[in-house]
Amino acid sequence: MRKKIVAGNWKMNLDRDESKQLFSNIISIKTSDNGPLALVFPPSIYLADFVKLNNGNVSIGAQNFHHADKGAFTGEVSAGQLKSIGCEYVLVGHSERRTLFMEDDQVLLLKIRAALENELQVIYCCGESLEEREQGQFINKIRSQVNLLKTFSTEEMKSISIAYEPIWAIGTGKTASPKQAAEMHDLIREEINVLFGAETSENTSILYGGSCSPKNAHELFMCKNIDGGLIGGASLDANSFHSIISACQ
Image (cartoon, rainbow, N blue to C red; front, side, top):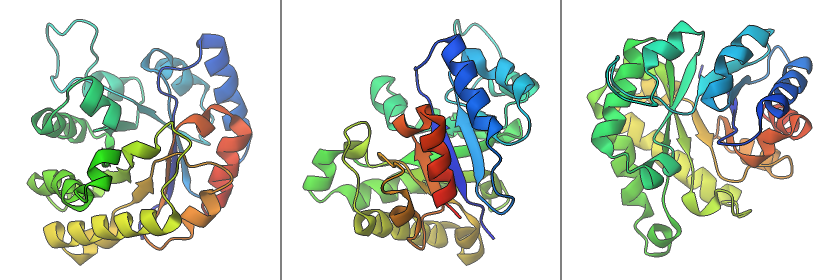
């Protein structure tokens, strides 16, 4: 049985006091025992603080890391360092890392490998641009991005979830319709089935990540192959974030 996940990606927002207040508000609200896994990805400088403050109501992940174990990589942190402070999850392949920081398939593969070797859970992001969707290239684009995972074993896939993030719906207020989102999630699950077989496909969590909010979360999460969300702006408000968590039962 695949798990449902609602993850908040805070990106580069909030100062230390604001972050601690938001985190305190989030963990103070008890989630349902049969509800989804609640997960937050704060800026990396707050990770160690949050691990100490955490009461077990949420899991904590890192937005980024370097694929090397150690070395002369000024400003970077490794998967091993994240694991050593109590980090549980990492994001890999977010569209902003792909486009703004030029992370290509080779870099993403190295990152996933490093995360798995350090027993971190991976949320691997894939998605198409507005141009790719309008030109009818989005199906091939998503298949290509999912196909990147073929180098991993079925056992390793137990530690990998996928987030579908239509780039044209990130931070724009636009959202893929439930029909559009469902079609892409169906496609991703079919592709995993082709690569790894039915059992792995059925057990892989696939999240929607494109302007999900309390207003549309329930309708999106009703779709068969949508197992939760990777939430951006709405995760910066504790009540909104918990409304989305509550919608994912």
